[in-house]
Length: 351
Image 1 (cartoon, rainbow, N blue to C red):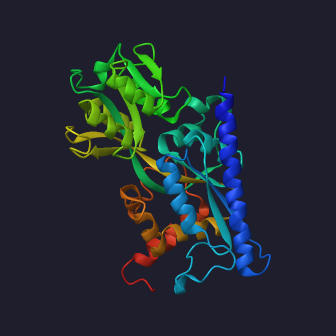
Image 2: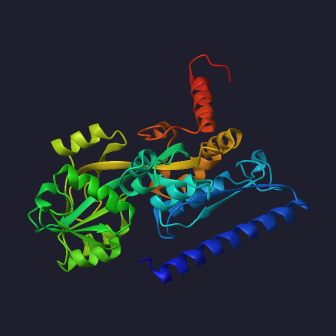
Image 3: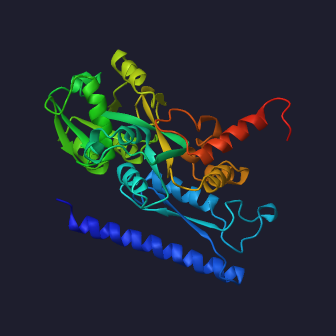
């Protein structure tokens, strides 16, 4: 059963987001001195502490260009003219995917593996049918799969976790879906280990107290909670660089090779793992001209500086990797932008 406090909390956060949007609209109208029309563009992100929220907020600010704003070439906004984008708090990929499919929000962030399952109507989306309204603007950055164990555990492979207690995230969380996919590849379904449903924060305390044997955490490295845990108790990361992981990546093209650098977590060597793209999704029914303008704004030089200021994750958002590992089609508006951009970059192209 859903937690009533959690539901009320989500409702309050969304109300605050809408109020913030209304305030922005009022400012825009006031600065223009008129009731100029504008486009309101919603981006589903994650909870306020998440990378999704931080990146979604940065992108919303970059692509917004309210009525009355100064022109881009004189230091004003370089976003989409007369558009106000707002980062909306959500519970993450699964909620964003469902809301985009239902047309409840215009766009949102989602991990590539969950987007794949929604597209084919499997896994957690089996009862809903295919999510045929999902389209992509870009693969923004890569999230890393962390199998965290105590350094004194003796575990060297995911296969060693048979019969153990594994914290896989919340019962209906994004990370549980990813964990099940990987664990099943190692012939470990949920009858072969004890799944523990806990947030990463709670799971870190449980691992420190030896109440679980492993944590599955998905996020851009370094994950602050994992870094904090490593300062409390010696940890290790299990490598996903064996034949099983290789076959899994071959089977699912959206699963990528990723390397977590050494000493990013205290005492932990460089670890090869699985990377999963964090995609910016939109509803297929959005106006192609709007999505073209949004995509162009995302890759505008002015946006580059905004993303860079968010830190390492923002700096990793690069045009060169925008089309890597996409499990669903590009939106036609985004596809047109990339086609024109590629043509303009060819030697001898007119500029």
